[in-house]
Image 1 (cartoon, rainbow, N blue to C red):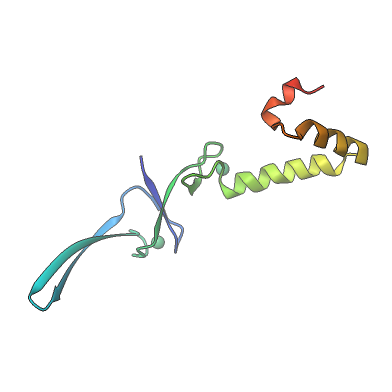
Image 2 (cartoon, rainbow, N blue to C red):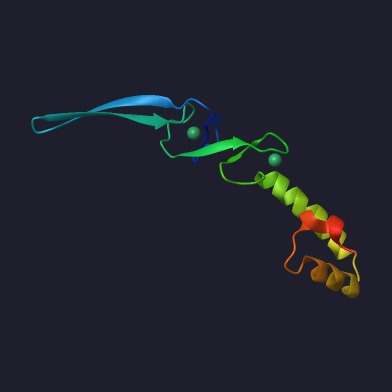
Length: 107
Ligand SMILES: [Zn+2]
Ligand SMILES: [Zn+2]
């Protein structure tokens, strides 16, 4: 299901309000529908979905929401800050051309 995040007020919803417009230019009348935020009426909406980790809204295409990314980076930094220079280099060696997903193969 496509959900939306309002770029202006941050509201998270799946049904934008529809605003009907009628525009007359000379003898032509054009009708169109704008999709807007149901809270603030802003028409700048981004596709969004639930964060797979915490369920909070995040922009579609992201892997984790901002809070989960910050929390992960915080935990990683806390761990890495306790390493000696040699341990850091060992981890660099393991991760050179590899991914953390393969860590069970590291020795
Ligand atoms: Zn809004
Ligand atoms: Zn999250």
